[in-house]
Amino acid sequence: MDANLQRHAHDDARIACHVVDIADGRLDPAAAIDFVSDHAHGGIDVFIGRVRASSHGRACVAIHYDMFAPLALTVFRDTAAAAIARFGPKAKCYVAHARGKLAVGDLAVVIAFGTPHRDEAFRGCREVIEAVKHQAPIWKQEHFIDGHSEWSEGCSLCGHEASAAGADAGMHQKAHHGHAHG
Image (cartoon, rainbow, N blue to C red):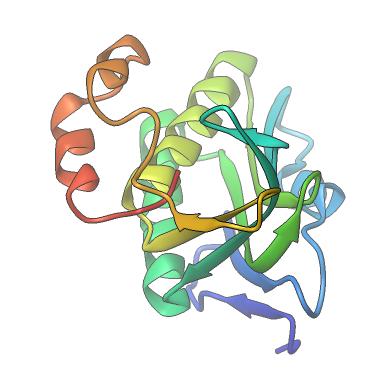
């Protein structure tokens, strides 16, 4: 196993899950697309999450992501398996999240979902990223331009916005109490 990559060991060739230590490497969207590509797939959807320059109206210069990788990888795998079960046996899913201090513009997360049809690809990718954000043990410390830093208080979709996103409110309420990923 590479020093910069931790992979969840499982026997499902339709799922790839990674935690990438930013000090040793970067997330690779091309690898995600390659993994989910298949001659049977007419639809591939990719979500790429980047560090943005502001948070809650404050200028942000970096974010430090920390996580318990073995549990995070289990959540990634279980989430991917559930989406594959829902959107078809030919679906494939790739999940990778960065760990460490990322600068504005750096990639924090890459999700790819491939299926025979576009609708399932869109829905599968959305389901996986939402579950990763709400269920995985990932903590986010934001570093601001004024020199202060703060741990995130939680995901922006928790609470009243969750129902507008079409997600199960029970999942969000449960996840809100146990995570600090935003």
